[in-house]
Length: 232
Ligand SMILES: NC(=O)c1ccc[n+]([C@@H]2O[C@H](COP(=O)([O-])OP(=O)(O)OC[C@H]3O[C@@H](n4cnc5c(N)ncnc54)[C@H](OP(=O)(O)O)[C@@H]3O)[C@@H](O)[C@H]2O)c1
Figure (cartoon, rainbow, N blue to C red):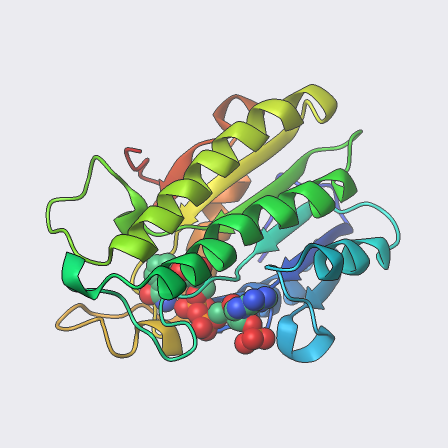
């Protein structure tokens, strides 16, 4: 069954963070899409792409030939270098917070800067970043996880701002921040509590369907895997 019905037949896709639980599922779903012409997988593990270092991001983008109709960025972190999310203000560590911002926020900005120019200008093009519902400021009623929440709120603002600029050079492009749900990957293992966890393939299919269904007028928005908009 065709997954990306709104893209030209033979479309080209790029998955950044394809070594992750969600990223590898997104790449596999796209590879199985009969309408897909090519899927390129990029990751830190396989290719040395470190999204927190501009020279690494720029070099990875430069190595790519041709245009893409879909760029899905699935990098990110909740536990970085063994440090997990804070439960209280007392646990804030400058170093840990900077690492959250470097990966989730700066990484998004650098990937957008160097990879968005690779999106097709003449045909419909889609680009997505994995945010998290806990990055919503309006939806924050529990507190905690201040660094991760703040870095994902920054990711949302980066996506929103970039989408406005991109719509001038790429009028058919759609750039979204997506919440994948609570997905069964290493990232969520210790923190999902009693929440049921979605299989990565199901989350991937659901998010791709959300992306497929948005038009250029909906660029720069924040959606959950089930298509519901999430407040900023
Ligand atoms: N799982 C969930 O329940 C959940 C919920 C909400 C949001 N999210 C978001 O979804 C995204 C993916 O999560 P996941 O569950 O798939 O986690 P995961 O399995 O731990 O995958 C994380 C990915 O990020 C990559 N990465 C980490 N640091 C990097 C760096 N400096 N440069 C380049 N790549 C880097 C990893 O690459 P290597 O392995 O190659 O190093 C890996 O591909 C994250 O942004 C996360 O915040 C997940």
